[in-house]
Image (cartoon, rainbow over all chains, first blue to last red; front, side, top):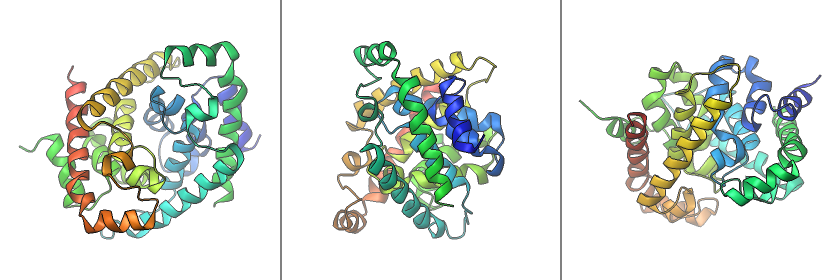
Length: 145
Length: 147
């Protein structure tokens, strides 16, 4: 099973949320322990904790891209600009496939509202759509190595 | 003694961290995350998720803190529910103060656009405005953690 299949399966079985599924797929190469990675990404599922924000698979990809960089406190802007460029490229590629990086737009419903959350549950959209977003996010990160 | 809000603002103004780094680094070492990892983890979230027009990095740093404060068990659902509830409450209170959690709306410049970015730099907005967002985010995290 490759990384994107692994991440998608974590999402399908609902062991982890979208953000956790992506960071979990890379955790061994990021210099961070699994428990900490799973905790810090805990709130990023469903568009940043159901606040209508960016898809958690996308924000976790930004976390992974950041953790792969070196950070030099003496020159904090050095690798930051390079990383921002990587994220903008990620953003572009993800949007090319799905048209957006926003959770509400990807699902067609706002998880922050009762009606939206009910519709997503009733249609089984998290199980149907989110594993794809997770798999794509992992694939794009791998392409960008 | 400096408050968490002051520490976070100092991180931005004196240590030249971005907004997300400034907030998470203020809390990370108490939560089992070392400073160097925290700096790399949040490095890409400045300026609205790496200048992509997204959520304010100070807000994202706060959301990471809420997750790190949880105790993880085999069934992650209770921890997830608690984190999501805190995030929704934080988002509400931050919007009460600043009307938005999105970088372009908070800053008054959409820094994805080159001219906007230049104007923001010229107006010193990253210093004047972002230090307030960072300070308020850290203060709100501290306040909510004690509730």
